[in-house]
Image (cartoon, rainbow over all chains, first blue to last red):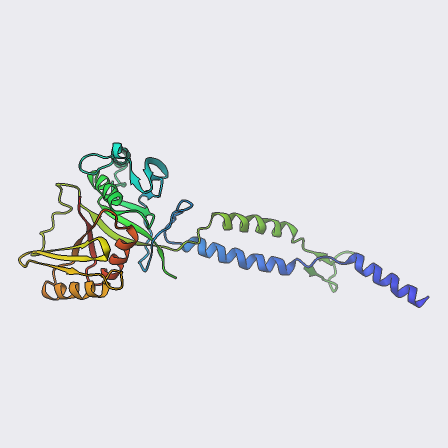
Length: 168
Length: 154
């Protein structure tokens, strides 16, 4: 009889058991705080395209907002919009002028400059700046970079900010 | 979480034991953490400052220095250091172990800097097929000696 009673008690106890989620809430709080902290202190919001390998180097970090130019194996994007087609990191010969400036890229920089000037005319607090963020694959040859830099400089974007992955 | 107040005078013998319902909080946290994990970028990035000069245009109104320093990365990991202006020379730094001899380049630039302290920038050019990675490596090696870099060759 006593054995039966103890069995019943055990059964009742197991039925009333609840999952302890207090510790889980603690863990989640810690993870959330960590993520919020790293989210707020990340220097530049740069998200390279898949397959793009940034060169690794020791460099300073500073927060800045500028026009994004991404050079990957197959295309060049300006402000996240594809503007030039590349063939294994090289411009198509029909896209290049005699001085090495790319027609498509030049047109895109012109449009961006016009947009900046339009905004700066409407709002005196905003100034058209010379800065441009260059997010280029480490395998990009100098001949392509030359065209990018020349096209940018031609339209007033002469202050180049080269993005690199920080050495750990 | 269990909170009890057995010694209180509220109610008529009704127990004040209650469980704080943590399930909705956990739900919120799960959604927030998932969102942040997806949107967060774990790539630590930095910046190298450089400049580019448009063909036929000066980058600034600042008076040019007495000497102009130019570093050219050539094929087969050879480097050419050229000085023009009041002093002129051209030194070729051959490759070392089939890699850029960055130590020799640093020594060369230190000598130029010692003689011409006003030289704070150099023009960096390269052969057409030299990869961006090598330009960054050279910039990394020289930035403490000559902080300013102007891309040229166009």
